[in-house]
Amino acid sequence: MSNAKDEAPDAESAASEIEDAQPENESAVSIQGRYDPRQGAGGYAPIIGALGALAVPGIVILFTVPTKPTPHQLQLMTLAAGLLIVSVIGSLIGSISLAGIAAEQELTANIPAASMRVAVPVVVSIVDMLAAFEVLSAIYLTESETLFALIAAAGGACAVFFTAFVVVDSWHAGPKDPSDRKRYIRQPWIERYEDAYKNMNRVTAVGLAPIALGMFLRSFHITVTTSSPTINSMVWAGLILSIAGALMGNRRAAHAPTGIQIPLQPTEAYGIPLILGLYILLLMIFLP
Image (tube, rainbow, N blue to C red):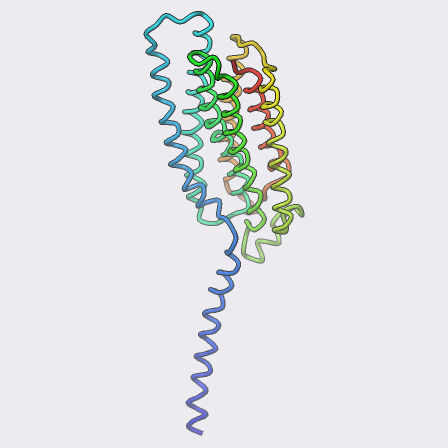
């Protein structure tokens, strides 16, 4: 009898240890292979902020050219300065927005969508900085215009790819509580891990198609002559995209009063990379 009494507590303690260890094992398995956009945003924020600081010396150099430039060179200098200023603005508001996403305590369903929108000023900042170097090459290295233009497009293509990759890990974001998940608006196209990868490839193709077209046109020197209207259109397009992306991204990250989480929508996933690709196509056509 005494042995039975002694074994009972041991069995109960062993069972409790198994129950305590089970959630850790389950969580370890469920987290494996997943990417947390919050941690990624926190890591990207200082990098993007430093990117804007790199554009400042270029702006200073443009405004301190000692020689007397020609009217055409003045136009190109105006374009280069405008692109660099947009790059600074995009990097600053993009880094602040990414830091806001990193401060989220839970991986809610709206974070992947907000991350894609906030990526718009970041991509514009990267592309405009590279495009400004292409404009400088048109002033000082006229034979290398096409090379630097293709480099700017390649940098934009990489940035669009990273933006589209958010789709992969959007499928597991959302409320964890079963009662909250009943009110969760989930789209079938991101329900499974496999579907998320398939759609990521499609989103990437949609975003890269205009860039590939722009690189093709640029390789054969199919461009528009640089003028004041084209300069204004390029600078204003980048500025409007940056500000709109940051504002819409922060609004998308806000928590709804009803508590219902809205996941990444197909229009967002496909539309944002497409808009960025069309903007890079515009640069390939209008850059000198």
